[in-house]
Length: 622
Image (cartoon, rainbow, N blue to C red; front, side):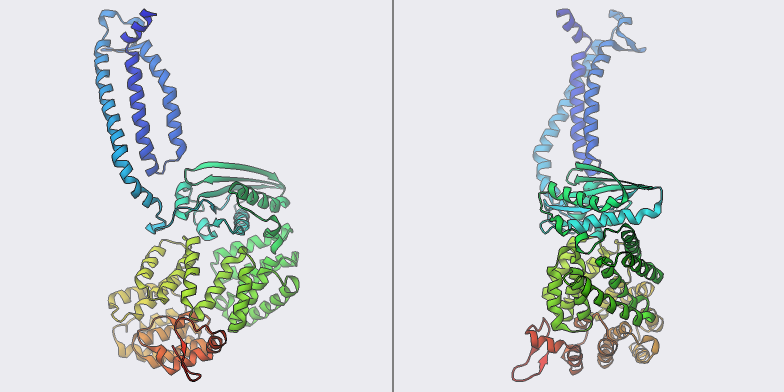
């Protein structure tokens, strides 16, 4: 045994073992620090550890069986003792061991005094959301549902995999104690193959649900995986091999599995299908196709085709409440994109309202549509309880409900109540351009221009229709008393490319007159009578530019024409900051009175943030 241990020492096996252990340990410590910064998946560090462990006995075997000589590596048996250079190799290994120990000591010191001190900064960075916005650490019970990947040979089946993901998201959104990221933000990662830990940080969630869908003939294969976004580890994975008709049951099974894992309560009896869905696969297929067209909304033809698909869905299943509801919402867009078919859309919407009253009078979708109709009709006293009823009906329609409720609060000038609701929208859907636009509106209306400009810059990295946010940025410049002409012109030219009708007409007429007040005012007066500008939005633009060029009479007349004569709907913009004190004028009071708001203020006792009754009479001031 003594000769064996002596031979191990002579062949430097112990020194090789020590050197290998020290170098491996240093490599693992460096990897543990560097890999997270490079977004390297956690399993890579585990793989490196396994490879180093496997390599250890191999290194010892090689040091025993082979020797380094001036002529290269040779088997130890072929090297004569007097020709061996093992003593020199041993001295070099001594230096490596000493150097490695010194490096190891340095790492220990750095870890104890430097990295620990940097931990608060790292924690701060971990609490930073998209584009550096500070967010709270992810709640324990929070999840994002990513779009399931379509693995079917037919790429047109994409609508089905997206629809499946959205249905699961809607079911999970019914759980009050679970924070679920809204669809727009979750789906913004579609096709990007992003590290799930990064997605978790971006969306400020603890868990991520992902999966895939493969459809072939009469066979449907769905794989769902729940991932812990803090370290990218798998919590569970489920496979479903079923027939297409089983897709409804699969959605519920996945949602139930998530709720059980996260220890939250999901009432299966209140699932989406039981609250306005369908069990008719053909109707469901038409519905998902229509929803896909709704999401892309590239042309007016998309709106027409989506409406037709919704009609086919309700024809196949006349009790499909959600399809009726979405058809109603689709038709509400026609005044914007298909103004020439406004009367047709209004008639069909009325038919849908009557149908839903008969079919599902207690449905949250029916309540939401009734609330929308009352707000559109400016029946404010009736609209308020209808909105409360829709809000109480359930989380599945919370985004739509929040939209009509926010619209109502803004129209009534109740900004302090609306602010936390809109802020909650952007927290739940941080990568949604629509949510960002809503927050920019709120910041603009409350004169928080610096914050609005910062959010506008952030929103430029988000996908979607940019015209609305560009328009809003121009509004802010128009109301500033000391707006720089160069900045105003640059934003004006940008908006001319994205703002659409009727701004393109204004851009053509005013583009050369931004620095000439007299010429600009003359043009605005001419456009006020122009038939092509006789729309609510056209008059609203005229009012904004008239205020900018200090023609308050024209600004007030254009506002009255927009909201009262032409039935403008974005009434919240009536309360936006102006360059001139328009609210103190009798004409402004006429607008508020003729919109029915004064009657609502008096009946409800809530005068909002801008108006108040005057003592001793029926007069008021804003």
